[in-house]
Length: 610
Image 1 (cartoon, rainbow, N blue to C red):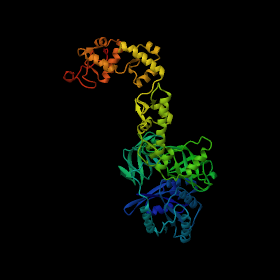
Image 2: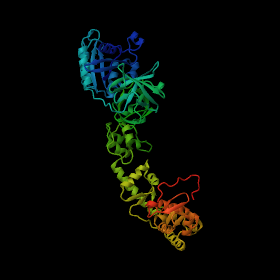
Image 3: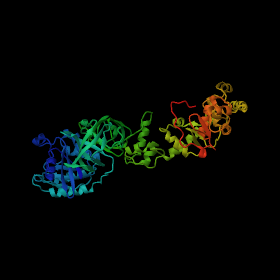
Image 4: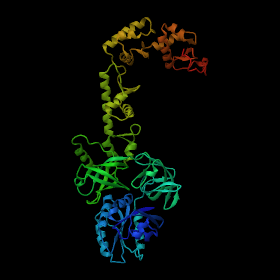
């Protein structure tokens, strides 16, 4: 299917022409038929060759220009109508200006009422006017909806134009601008629109920009029930869900998690200088008409602040129009849907210079250079393809910025090692804050890619520092502790003795990281190698052994014996037999041969540990 809209001055025969082409009545309301005046959008279709051609018939009266824009907005081509007996009129010009602002490039000119006047002068004038716009040189046909003259030739030209339209992407994300919503008894809410890209299926979940979700209960296209409809197509969608009764013209249904709701966008403006624009105008895109505030940036660039969020993407075309139409409409091309804040002096001028380099064509590499770090999903939601693979999770990084971050991270880690000898290793979260990164996964990826660093237990160390140097007071405290433990190697000093020596938690942690002490548990420190020595003592006991037997053999207290045995369990020197007994493994990390119980009794969690 192909879809096009009509355009032209009021009472130039647009509805009569599509009625003659399709045999269907585009005017849906009795008042429209009684007055002979189109007041709202009409929808009719016909078969041309092997395909269908659907028409969105728009009103031509100046009071209904917003309605005309709602009909033309989602449609890529038009049937432009001028009457032979009246010639070019004000709304002919306004409709042409709007089409030019939208960048529409496909059209057929129909000179109607050719049975009432010579169509040639009007045809020549209209062709010249259209040629100076985005429509360019268009095929033209003189017709009469009353006599039928020229209709076959017009059908042939429409078929040729339809065949030349760009092929739609049926795998694209759905953005269905709604032009009508109504209730059907027994079915609920039905919405209609022109599906320009993607595919709709029964059962699909769709969302609105504010996050409300609906489910597709049924689909029709050209009054036929369908289980799936691919672009391009006129569709009627039976929806059910949160807020379905609030749907109406100007709203939009979207593929979930694939679009960003934009309230601020930077755009390029065609036509007269941006400085001449009123501060408050209306943005027309798709079927939506949203008031916006304009902040000029450069000669042809501006920032738009929207009264409500819209799902915009880079490259979208839209129209800025002053309510009342006293100034010509302006076309806009969306350049950025997530622009930076302009808070510092000179930020507006700098942003204008940056926008001058942007074309409105999605460019993943350029976008990544500007943003430096961005999620791949967000870039896609902006309408920009990802130029490279993620560096961590879903994060994309500009190569130059990534290299700079690696160097900065190494510098922070080295500086921390020099400045904090008692706090070895820069915590990953602290590194994230220092670099201003949004995700710790990025720090992990940077550290893995930086050969000058190594990561251990959530901290980053210089790769060439196997053991950090200890300050003289800590070295002296460790030497004193060595003398204490030489007499009783498994009698870890009490908290008071550690405080007397100046070995607080930070100093003890630094000494343990340097390999000068062995930290068994919080507040329990022994000399390096004490774990292997303790295992050798225990191995000499009859196996298995109890806590009391181990404590006596090690000549230590229960305060030390309990965490020491748990430490030996974790290191693979010992293992539990039951709730009361342990035994030594033959070597760290190995089993105990055939004597090991394959299924030790389950422990009651309420029972004491020893």
